[in-house]
Length: 102
Image 1 (cartoon, one colour):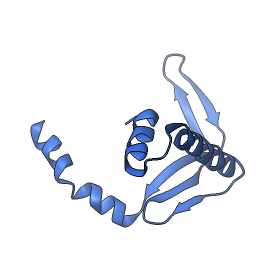
Image 2 (cartoon, rainbow, N blue to C red):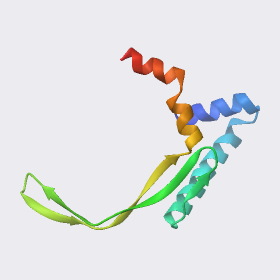
Image 3 (cartoon, rainbow, N blue to C red):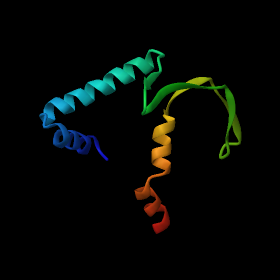
């Protein structure tokens, strides 16, 4: 689903203008990115958590050149779904149809 599809879905459900919805979604992402760059996690009850996870320093290998390089410790952004959301996805009948079709 793309951002424009999300905007259209919200417009149909709420009856609000698409431009106002798009601006709200854009501002939401600006706030989330700014908070995470600032070192904060985002907690959305019933949906999940956008959190920063520390990756430790490690030694990586370049197989083509047969060399080693050190990857310094760094943070990565990650999404951890709420338990109830994860259960809904796991128990989804629509998703189980997709799995059985493959």
